[in-house]
Amino acid sequence: MKYKEASGSVLKVEGPVSIRILEGEFSILGRRVVPKDTIVVPKGKSLPIEIVKDASFEVKAGVEAKISKVQNAIPPDWRISIDKILNEHGPLKVVVVGDVDSGKTTFTVYLANAAFNRGFKTAIIDADPGQAEISVPTTIGFGILKEAVITLDKVPLRNAFFVGSTSPADVPLRVMVGVNKLLNQALQEGVQIIILNTSGWVFGKGARELGASLINMVSPNFLVLIQRGLEVEHLARPWQGFKGMSVIRVSTSPAIKLRSKEERKDKRELAYKNLLTKSKIRKFDLSSVSLMYTLFNTGVPIPRSTLDELEKQIGAKLVYGEEKEDFIFIVLEKPSLNVAELAKKLKETTGKEAIVVTKGMEKGIIVGLLNQSGGLAGLGVINEIDYESRSIKVLTPIEEEVSVIQVGQLKLDDEGHETIKYPSPPL
Ligand SMILES: Nc1ncnc2c1ncn2[C@@H]1O[C@H](COP(=O)(O)OP(=O)(O)OP(=O)(O)O)[C@@H](O)[C@H]1O
Ligand SMILES: [Mg+2]
Image 1 (tube, protein in one colour):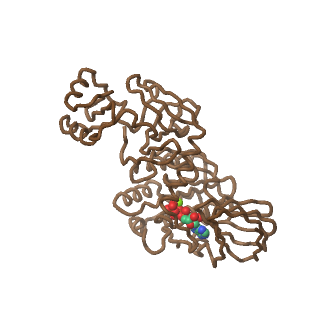
Image 2: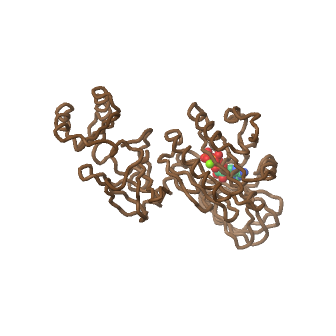
Image 3: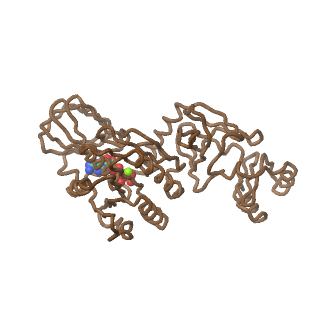
């Protein structure tokens, strides 16, 4: 369908939509769009189009697509705060915090484009492992803009850090380490502004702890609160009057599109599916490749005679066992309904942390593969662990040499659907 719009009007476009501009000029979050450019608004996302010069354009819209005229999609305080931020001298660090669906990611793109358009070498760290766009879910991504973008997934990826979960609540230390590493890398690469986009996990003790720690570590020049009312003021409270850090408050856009849990999950699953279709099985010997974030493979194997004794006590066949001063790890041959009960009993009798798993339960657990220099080569999922021969098979698109396998806390099925989320390391 063909549309015509006069300069000064603003459209809110909900995807899936593809728009080809024939005449005139748009601005989308500060990205100029001119004739022959085609922009794609993905399903589940909405974007504001500001008509800069009288424009005609062709629209291909999917079933769920909507295009409506709005008064103003970009709140005036966004422009004011961006001017304030970009008038400072770099390297600038900006942390963006807000509740779920407040517009953090959109504000991040808007600020990044404005910085890029003014000639700043502009970096983004996407510290939301659930809604990762620069990289894939379960990771924190870091990218440097090569051009203004309309969505974060168009920012070229420079590096990523695997946290192994889509919930920062389950892996807050890894989020801290990832942000720290990527921030240092960005500074070393001489960027003039780094914008840290965060997750919407802002309520509760854990969220406060992570929020305060992240802000403390990054020590940003600007802390941006994006909020409807005063809902994230608590994150700024410790830093009020702090020299060297300005707290900036901006409003959420009236054009926000709320997303359901299902829509968020669908988007993540698309990324996993993409990963899995390009993957092949690789076998790693656990004597040369190490595991991280597991108890398994960090202790001493329990002798067969002791396992036989244990088998009699618990009445189930054991494939493998391992222990150290602080833990005991047992692998059952067959599924048992009372795995939790068994772990509890073992904990009581040994006084150690006990993990009881069934052979085969490891299939589908997401992993990060580190290369020889300790950087993330890419992701994969466990296919099988052979406890006797101490080897692990991983389905992955990565062909590089691997030195460490970081075991995550999320399980996927063959189609890339999320099946189990573990609150703590499963192996
Ligand atoms: N100014 C705006 N104009 C039009 N659409 C917008 C605007 N701001 C946000 N949106 C849309 O609203 C939705 C939510 O915004 P966004 O993803 O930026 O929020 P978020 O706070 O990052 O959410 P999450 O908590 O999921 O990370 C997105 O589809 C986004 O494109
Ligand atoms: Mg976001």
